[in-house]
Amino acid sequence: MSCDVNNESKIHRKKRYLTFGIITAIALILPFIKVNGNHLFLLNFAQKQLNLMFVSFDMQELYLMPFILILLFLGIFFMTTLGGRVWCGWACPQTIFRTIYRDLLQTKLLSLRKSIKNKQAPTKKGMYLQKIIAVLLWAILAFIAASDFIWYFVPPENYIQYLQDPMNHTVFLGFLGGVTLFLIYDVIMLKENFCVYICPYARVQSVMFDENTIMPIYSDKRGGRIYDEHGKKLWSKPPGEDDDCTGCEACVRVCPTHIDIRKGTQLECINCLECADACVPVMAKFGKESLIQWTSENEEEKGIKTQYVRFRTVAYGVALTLAFIGLIYMGSTKEHMLLNINRTSELYKIKDHGKTVQNVYTFLFQNTDSKDHKYYFEVNNKDIKIVKPSKPFMLRARKKENKIVILKTTKTLVDTDKRDTPIPITIKAYAVDAKDKIVVLRHTIFFYPSEKVLEKYEK
Image 1: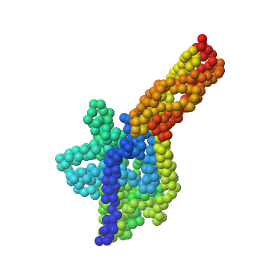
Image 2: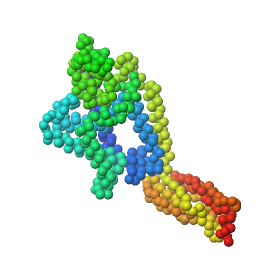
Image 3: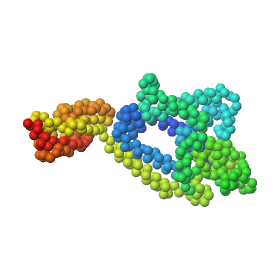
Image 4: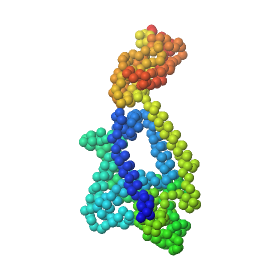
């Protein structure tokens, strides 16, 4: 009994199902969590905003996206170096969806398959009603999964509004329908062929493996050799008296990607550990551990303890840390207002018989804060005055507005006959009601005409 209990504790299937449930719950709940009106992550194309860590950023602040992508890829590379394709077997949506459809709907709920321990056998013949029900149930779940995906690009609060007004949101509906249909086709028709032939990660991960990478490994020493060095199958059951493999091939039947783990490390293996689970009860009858362990080549073949801290893992760890620090730093420098300054095609205007020189600009003010603010600005040159706008103006939260700005001077800024002179100036724009917090500086040019031009207007 103690042996059975000990081996039962080594079954990974329940742990995987629990992980699937946690990941699914997090993915479904996160879009609805808001702090100060902002989401944890939302790339909102309609409003041209990025919400990250409950802070709203304008599209002009998308310098954060490279850090997010770097963290994503480095994180997957780090996991792969440590645990092989652990992402594929334990967290990938493709694996979760296939497990729901094949193991839950087809096998447990509708009995279209005899057992979840045999993934090689096709579904039972006939039973057309059950098969239709399985497709319909998955179609509903695929629609929910597609909606959840879209909630990271369209806020859930806008999602229902878009559905209720389909004629004005055809792109949204097309995208939602396209993702739903792909998930239906992928899970029902493509199956694990997506992992084997389409997903690029299967090709990339092989170059990240080393002798310390954790993966499912069949023990030739205990079980006996099944394949020769060229991958040719010798027999189902090893002939040696000390070979523990019984040739039951439970590990083969349970494999979702249809491989024989006894052949060695293979591209198609997704680290789901179904083969290891299948071997546990067989070996338990002999009071022995599973012939398939989640271990490294060093530990299995050379008896050397797995080195988790090594150059690759340290390098990825350092890179992840630096990328995370960069993301935090850049995120902390968020500007609560943005200002773009453009000059008009006319260099300047001269009025009052050459006594007044004006420059005209277009200022694009953008309130990236979650609150309404009044805005105004100053010029760092005391001889240059603001003509228009003459007073502060209100700008709603997350809105932008173009303002025609006229600056003038009645002083002689430059005394030269040769040419017009560009004078560098600095514009200090700020929120009147939060002047210490919301302020930006922008540099531009004030053109002052030559003395010859001014003389023409004096006459």
